[in-house]
Each structure stands twice: as structure tokens, then as C-alpha cells.
Image 1 (tube, rainbow over the protein chains, first blue to last red):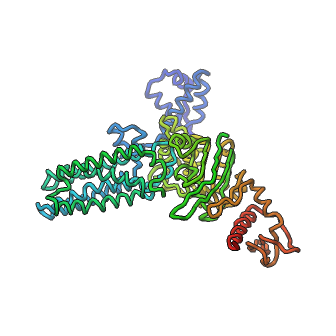
Image 2: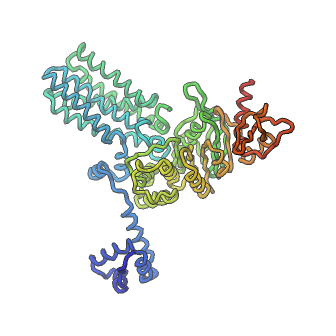
Image 3: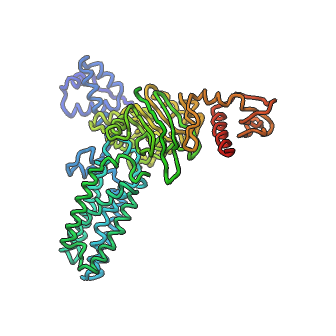
Length: 278
Length: 287
């Protein structure tokens, strides 16, 4: 491979750990490419050190082969998420670029429409209606067979399907809600748009996961959205201004979220086979 | 018995149609092949065996555990490898990344040991040269091998492979057979296929499924035996032939009830399989 080889005395010094760091690094670089010098190194180290050498060599191979984490994975690691969990989360389909782009577009549309409508209630209501739907759709997409390519492989693995469900739901909901909070702050009626939709979002997301125990998760999400939108509009028109986000409604949302969570945890075993039985 | 699969009267329906209708099956150590036409219920049965689909009725024991209980299912999944019919991949991941991802799902938490295992299975299926390549850049045959590699993670006792040779060219199929016969010993492999050659090459047991029911369970030689005296060559299609096709030397290969003066030939596994399925079709028509 190469005309140059490590001199015997240098190799002996290296094997005994008695060469300067820079020379050691140079020898190691050469060893990676030169089988002849690796044989020489094997010959010069004492029998008892062969194991140590093999361990070192394995270490080198492991470092070289180790996958380089992707940007999202690195971000999660920086945030203190463990390596395993970061990798599982990074593979969530709705944390990918296409979902983030779709979510941003939906939020952008809601903000634009709200601003275009001026400081009237209609724009604010539009934003408040759309914002809680986004995490519902994100979570539904994260678990739909057609969206998660490794759905069945993951299901047949011993890793708890319920834990994976909650982990990914939490990650998707966190990302979506953060974006929606930022978008809400851009609107004129900040007292409502900044946070009033958060509890409804949590309740709708958990409710979707509960309904998904019986039907396909996409139908579950569609059903929840189909109930949510008329509820918001009709309560606004008939009960009172933004009634679906008032104190009473927030309490109802809290109760729905709590009951849904209890039902989810109590029935966690249902997630061990295909959702909706398909 | 370790590595065994016991299925008794298992049924699973979708929208009123029984995809699997009362199947009994017992598989021990070695390779068992499920043969059957499209819609025979092979995939549904394999999904049930892989614990991703619960049966409507019937009794199942996999590796000595009941997959109907959470503890039993977990114990099975810890010793299970599964290649679905259409395995999905995160195509932006490299081969190493993807298999490492599945290894995490298989509870391999020690990073160093996990990476060693990932390297082992990648080498086993002959993909070491492309382990750093993104999956989207691989050919269909290579992706199939990535699917096989993830199914072999952790040296599982029960390996379920759904159509593992679909879309492979003859050379890749040969390589697959070589891998399965090399690592199939001492564990239970259950695979489905359309290819009778795959069954003849690697399976110790063959199960023929038709419309959700089990038509035959036994050795490939036992299946061939069923067609003894029922395959003949002629210049034309025989009046009582169930299936007939013209072979390379211009003669019709007939499978069915031969005439008295028929030129009988030794049956192949394909003849026996076609005869079995055709006989069943005829029996259903006459019922």
C-alpha cells in the first residue's frame, strides 16, 4: 500500500506507550492503512498486550464506523435527550422537514388571514380554531401506517409501543405548539392567541389517541377535528365571544385531557398490536 | 420445545372476509415455507405470528409463550425477527443508521455492543461495502437484504420473513437461500413465498395455504409424493388435466388425471403445488 513503514524502534516505543503524542497519532494514522505495520505491531507487543491491542483496534473501528447523528438528533442530544431516545425521536415522520413545512404553511395562513381580517374577532377565531388542530394532525400522521415506514417493524420489536407513542406525541406536540405560540404572539389579540388554545390542543390530541384505539388514527383525527370546528364556531355565535376558550371551556378541556390520559394509560396494552386493527 | 410455533384453529377476518380461516400449524426448529397464491392468507398468518395482528379466534403458542398476554408478547418479541411483506425504510438513513435504529427498538441499549451487532448482521447479509450508503441509493435487492439484516438482529430464535425473495434477481435469490440455510439451523424460520424453488431449496417443512385454509403440511418430498403418477408429457393438453403448459422442448406438461397410455414423468414441487390448489378449486366448483 505504501513505501514507508514504521521503524522497529518507533514501533516498540509506541507499543510501550513511550512516544510523544504527535508521533503516536502519526503511527496510528499509518496503522489504519498498513496491514504490514499492524503485523509488526502485533509481533512487538508482549503476549499479554495483544488483547489490549485488539481492544484498541476495535475501539478505532467502532469510532470510525459509528453513524454521524443527523442535525435533529444532535439538537435533541444537546437538549439532554439520551442517545437512544434521540434516535427514535429523530425518526418520527412528523418531525421531518415536510411536516414542519406543512405546519408552518398552515400557521402562516392562519396568521395571514387573522392579520388580513384586521383586529376583528373573525381572524382571532380562525387562529384559535386552527392552532389546536395542528398537533392532532401531527400526532395522527406520526402513527399512521402510510406515514411511518417502519410501523410494523417497530410494532414487532420489544420496545414499548405505548412509550414510543407518548414520546413521539410529546415531541410532535412540543414542536407544533412552540411554533403556534410564536405565531400567536404575532397577532393583535395576544391575550387569547398566545395560550388560550393550549389546553384544547392537549385535550384534542389525547382524545385522538384514545379514539385511535378503535379506528384508524387518521379517521380518529378527522372525527375529532370534525367535532371541534363546529363546536368552536357555534359556541362563539350562540353562547358567547370565544366561548370555547373561556374559563369554563378550559376546565372542560382539562377534564377531557385528564380522562383521556387515564384511559390511555389504563389501556396501554391495546397499542401493542396494530392501531385500528388494520 | 424451544423455538416452536403452535397454531390451533386460528381465524382472522377483515370486513366479514376470513383471510385466515381455522389454520392449524406446528413448526419446530428449521425452515418452514408457506406456499399459496395471492390472497391465500399467508401475510395475515405471518402478521399474527409476528404478534402485530391479534387473531379473532384460535390458540397460539410462540416460543412457549401466549402472545395474547402483554408479558407473553414481550417475551416473544425479545426473541423474534420479522421482515414484513413491504418493509418500510427511513430512506434518508444510511444502512448502518437504519439497522442501529431497529436495534434500539430491540432494546439493545449498550451502544458499543449494539454497534458490534449491527456490523455483524450487515456482514452476514453481505452489505458491509455499502453500510455507509443511504438506503435511497440502494437497489431493490440490497434493500431486501437490509430488511433481512434487521430481522436477524440479536440472533432471534424465531424469524418470520414475508416474501423475502420477492423482487430479487436469480443471483440475489441464490444468495438469500445460502444465508437462510447457513443461519437457519437451530432456530425456527417461517417464510412465505410464491416460489416453489425457494421451498425446495431451503425448507424442511412446507405448508400450502389456499383461501385462508391449510391444504397441506409436511415435507417438500411428501408434497411431491402427492403428485406421483399424475404428471405426464403429451403433444396436446390431456382431457382431464387440471393444469397444462408447453415446456421448452415443445411438449405439453400435464398435471391432473392421466389417460391410461400416458407418458408419466417424475413430478416436481411446482407440479404438486399446482395440482393441490387446482384439485381444491375443482372440489369447490363441484360442491
